[in-house]
Length: 315
Ligand code: GFB
Image (tube, rainbow, N blue to C red; front, side):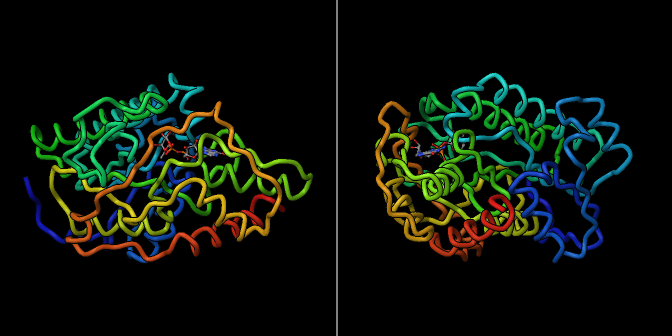
């Protein structure tokens, strides 16, 4: 099922669900260029896990378009420690928002997967049709199952009810607004906060795992730009990967961050910690063919992220 394109956001009421998060806040910044009315409701005022509350909000606000960027997210450790929360919250939020979008005839809804929804040993770079061809990475199975359910629900509603629901699968995102927790967050904010601590107090920087896993790190403002692009230019059932097209190993990442942060202390790999998927490289051919590619290099993105951390978190 294909709808008229481009879809215009001009004059539309646009709800960014999850506007407090890193991606949601970046989307709100990006949408300011679109001449639309942006709705962003704080997490404490609307619990997306509560179906009736979500429906009441939708009945009152009647958004034309929704970017579903909400989620309970975290790095490899958080995923392992809190699998119940990750599957329940993410599944509930997705089901409530997607079903409300159908009930209230939202014109267009964009939902998000994650590169961890691909099988652990998927062929690389991962093309969209690799989804559901093998077993998931155990460290993030709960999160991945909830995300896959969300994507499948969107596709089923598109097929059965004709809802204009599209889905994107982003690479590992990083940037301003990330969760800079030494243990709970993803690798980039985790390492930045731990390197900073070692600079201050000395001691050995511990890097989780072997340092060999490779990831496609995508700057969050690039991701937000890609999502706005897809909202306007894409309407089909098939998911679309969003990435930079490049990969970097964790050991290389440590080197780059050490250089940017002027850190030269001792380092050690903690082999007791999990590596997660050995390689996650997204095939971005479909997105490139549509006419979008990322702008920020990893080096510039990391510098911008560290600047933001120094200004907003450290001080
Ligand atoms: O960022 P991260 O947790 O994402 O970890 P995943 C990436 C790699 O960095 C893993 C290593 O191999 C980690 O072992 N690593 C090294 C560290 N030091 C650190 C550190 O201080 N903190 C963290 N977090 N990792 C997540 C999924 O997996 O990716 C989520 O668990 C989500 O569900 C997200 O999909 C995008 O790519 O391994």
